Image 1 (cartoon, rainbow over the protein chains, first blue to last red):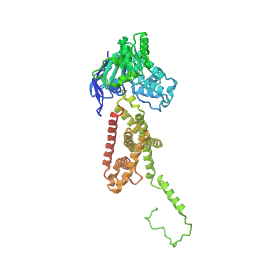
Image 2 (cartoon, each protein chain N blue to C red):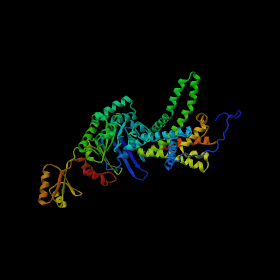
Image 3 (cartoon, chains in turn purple, cyan):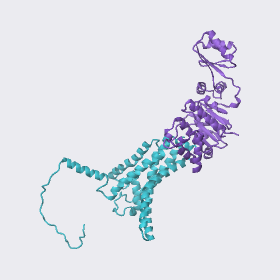
Length: 317
Length: 260
């Protein structure tokens, strides 16, 4: 079964900007991370999937429906959490989510019940009767998630759900999304420009750049990826690289840092010994937490050949 | 004053020319008298009954649409809540029409509500059913006129409000369109073409259409002191219809594109 699929999807805006370029991808149900730099085309893709934007060419299917011709049917089964601030400040969260539930076709009482449910699921209890204008950013993000859940959708499209959250808030939001994907049985597409953030909770990842597919991968197939050490020295990077290669380590240069596969704990010792022998000023040595970032950076990419942004995004995580 | 058909009963007495020897007030009093006159005129005191009521009527309706339309329409644009609506089965055109209908109905309730209350009061005061029926038939043109005001003002206000996400700008724009267009009518009617000058302002368009359709019912006491639209009544009616239609179509066009 396919959750969503696009075939040769292209979107050019009137100004001549190409937001999506011949994008063909197919995703199975589950939690899907949609990763790309700002301007990579994530939001455009989401709007096409929602049927809010007609593609210039190509086609998309969501939950087996064509969003272009069956927009209302598609949107009845999707919950959408926009990236930007979208909550009217003068309403309470309970009122707003109830109202939006009714806009999805729920009867009045059902909308009220489900709104309370949804707000409780995202962790808003008595606060839900206060005006949204007085909420913290974290609470607003939760309300946005609740309004996407209120009508019990089959698919959630979350556009940068961790935007503006502190690290603890990010973790809480990601755990919540993971719970929705696993316990509630609702498929989720999470957009993010931070690969390392979403990889933790995703079953599959789709990376796009400049509107083209960079890579689509099922994370369950990626369990064998090894960890990587990042070494940065203030000078003598080339000498160190040569030395480490002589020691039999797989060294790769990336800008001012060296990437070395972490085979075992002994790798640390060998690197430190090499640095000490060359008497180089060691700036940092740390383990990349995000294997997938590494995988995405090293794998040969799509036909376009990636330009900088996603790699940098991936690297800075 | 009194009847003069019979033989004259009043006599003008020649009492001679009287000199005035009373006080003659100074500059302060002249200023004060002119000021008070102006102030009274501003509120329609000392003018015809219609002149007393009409400015309040226009101000009331303009104020209402200037408050309601931005509240319903501009605020949704400003807070960015529209994507939450449009990501649901709700159609864009339905959103726009529902908002428009709410604005129009609000104006209609403001204008038609008091009429309904008066009708209820008068109807219960009647002894016979025929009296109630008479009250009812005299209510209908009033309600129709109110509906016309509501449609024209509501659709213009909704269109203006849909152009901005800031409520203050929306309200300002609406007031500007309604109140600034009024002097244009005055200028045009002086320059010439007085009969069609009213087409320059929505207020006079509605009044003109009203005079054309309901002149007898609307102005039984005021001696027909209206706009002076001559034979151009149907033109006013047609312009009103075109105006409302254009506003609704532009509103729908606006919401086909907005907030994608």
